Length: 457
Image (tube, rainbow, N blue to C red; front, side, top):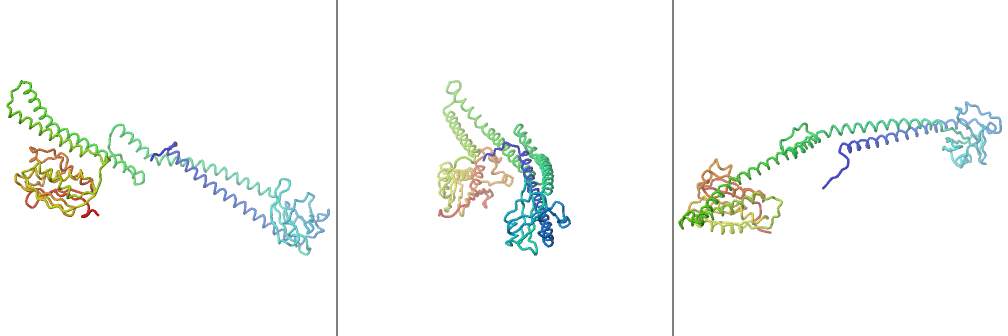
């Protein structure tokens, strides 16, 4: 999966922080503004309703009709409140010289008794008013209407909105700065890891970096160090493999070159070599070529990547042992093999398993004396190969499966020191293991264990 981002991580963190704070501030400001607005309006409605009830108990039609304007200011309770009287005949009387608002159905329904009261906002000449209607006492078909301007309330709400806008803007700016500071501080270890990775790519220096703390960044740094350790170990193994391979190839190549030079000189007449010596040289060349072929095959097997395509199929390990025995008997006709193999089915690579079994049998045949016996037993998924050789010393046991390792006794014998290492690699690839030890009779005992089942079903 390829991730592409045009913005840097720090800028995205800053942007997300700013957006989150801005949304939170917007919700809080909107909630506070609406709460103040509703509370102010509710308080105004309650005040107007109380005044309307008081006026409805004392006012009379004559007091607001005509030009007497005898409504006392204390009765209204405020100088910005206007008093109107509406009738069930849709007539409006006012104690003010100014024109009356456009009253509608709610006010006249209160006058006719269809509604107990009415509270609503009306508009006149571009101004908004709050109107409360309450029926009069004693005069049927009449209702008083108290009207108060909302200009003062709207001015307060505008100031409140402006203050919230300024404070919210300041909060958003502060959140952006705080997000930038947090992103810059929090991403400092990431930048350090980035510089370390760039330095590794430039210098190939695989030394681990220092790790402090126990947070997610520290875990990332620890995982990075583990990757560096694995990479350094892989590089060391690769270098060791190349060095060991070069060392192992140098001796047979030198000997092969010397023999070929002698044969070339004999062919040109510069050196007189008897026929028997020539035949020995040709046999030696052939043996060296076979040794090089085996060594190169072992190196290819060890260096094979796991990503290559493998033929994985159900395999009967008993059949694999039989095929390997046919091959090893041709190589070591002087050794007797005693076999007792039960069927053991598993899923794996038949060719690789045959190579592993063949290496075990070749190793047993190499160490067995002429006329000796190699016992091969396959039971319950355990392949045990026992020879009658000198066995493996306690000092050599930890190194049996190392690459290119050869005991002092085997230095003069043919082989590259890769056979058992290949067995170990193939066993691990099949979720198994191989062990080395001493047999009860004194020889070497190698045991290969691979998971599977008795029958293919």
